[in-house]
Length: 599
Image 1 (cartoon, one colour):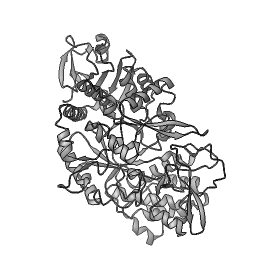
Image 2 (tube, helix red, strand yellow):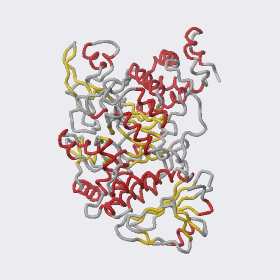
Image 3 (cartoon, helix red, strand yellow):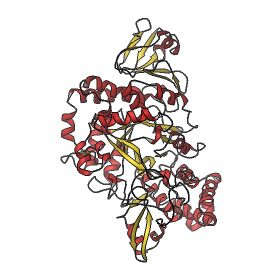
Image 4 (cartoon, helix red, strand yellow):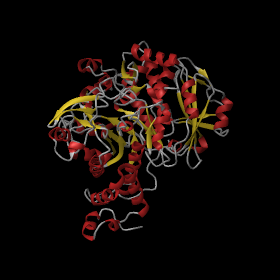
């Protein structure tokens, strides 16, 4: 190990007491990233980086841990203001109260979607990254949640709000922000640029020096930042350190695929973007090695998992193909496409895992099923969403045509059955059981947990399709909703599954997975604990009719044990009396009785 002060003079070295030492290799990796990104300025940048390290006093978090996750890891996804109760205080306090009352032992981490002051896109157009939106609460509220749960924050690093001080300074020509944004010539050809939206790529604006056109990937209010300027990088290193000091345990890199711009190319997944992800990973290894880096790249599967790198980029990537494939399978009663995808899914690199989810604040991406679902099946899925009250959002292709980009609907609305809500609840719970059992860490959107239906009024009044899935609950209204027999069934069953899941090492994120193709109507896989002492066989009926599974297959997978323990229902079943007929949408998590650790 080498004392950090080797890169500073003695006086400057006194400001980095928070990090007692750092290996030469760690610092060399950071230097190499600076060289690749910024060339001859690398030495100046490495010195500046060293100078930053003591700013937030992170000595308590800069301690390596032997394992950064286990089977207890589950993540609740929520806006800061998803739950509201004036009698308790600001929305963050209401969320904290609800989580403490209902989610202890079921949820380990709370993902707070962007909570900073914002101007559009429900938080993803950030005005000030270092403040908490006063309508939601303050940093103290967030730290109080962090006292009971781990915290996950977003780093919205591709763009910021047109109402930010950075953009105001750009317009006024004030350093350093006058170079924080990307100016482009509207006369050039940008047809190769990959677009996630139908809005114009360039937005005209008037600055002190005249008219300019700035790059706007997502909307005219979300101005893309110029990562070719290292000043932008250092702004975000500082913000990252601030968030860690406030208790952040997982950082989600929002829309990171679009970060680095190549005007003559696609401006997505550029090599420099991967270099920046590597750099941020190495910085976290120095300042907070227990912090997990998660990339959000809503793109086809092969592109998505590229952000694992060689195990040196993100520790977690979203399983974006899972939500649409799972919805398609349960809507059609055909598990074939989900089974094929899961069977071919390669294990993540060592030290990495998947972030499994079915729903989030965004819609359900269509791009991640490119090459996985034939077009007629994709069209069928789109029709199912529309018939269930959902909306479709579009993107512009290079030839100017529009293609579906995402499906806007609550996952519960997509899978409920109007004339048989009890069966619809079982179908929905089947989808969630699958997500919870697959290799990785599960993320549970608050509106899945609460069995929320489409908020058609919010979508209509705002003109924003995504608000169909972003209902704001008054806590008093939510408590009434959860007393409804079907809503209560979903909520109570979900919480119970989460708590029982956490007792089984076969659900450790690193536990191996094997998928079996046994029937078009069944999705079947197993999980084997890292220590090899527990095997969990997971069986799901995708059909609205009973389906049989071969008893000999089940017995073989569970080592011919005399008894099985079914985790979801907490039932002990003898091998001889095991019912090989699964009820419609039934889910089974089976372990051999001799392998049982606890209920």
